[in-house]
Structure formats: structure tokens, C-alpha cells
Image 1 (tube, rainbow, N blue to C red):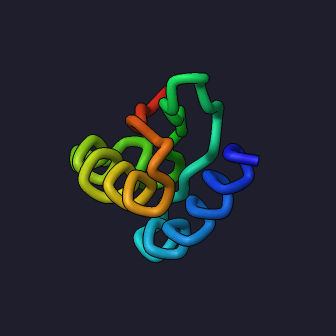
Image 2: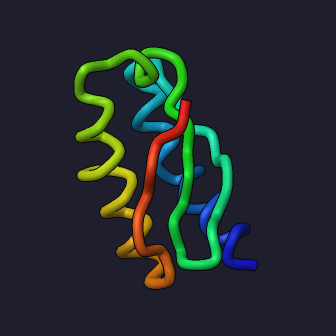
Length: 75
């Protein structure tokens, strides 16, 4: 259920990333609320990817889903 909430929230941020030629893929959700995602497309190699991950995606997910403790990027 929590995983479905995370995926739905990622769907809400996806259009912003796609507008810049990138995307985000859900990878996993740990028991302690850490969401692992993979940035793809233009976002995958962008020098601002870490800022997008933390200031954009993580902030949004934490606001929408209080159980989310962090968002990390994986390759």
C-alpha cells in the first residue's frame, strides 16, 4: 500500500522531469521508509541530478507521504 502511494506520487513529478528530457523509475522501498529511484534520460547524467533528487523528488515525497524518510538514487 505504501509502495503504491510512492509510485503514485512519483507519477505526479514525472511530467516535470519528462519536460526536460528525463524520467524517474521506482526501484524499491525499504522498511525504514527509504525510497530508491533511478533517474533516467537527461536526468541520469545531469550535473544537477542530486539536487533534483533531494530538493525536488525527496521534498515532494516527504510532504505527500510522511512515512518516507529519504530518497536515494541508484544506478
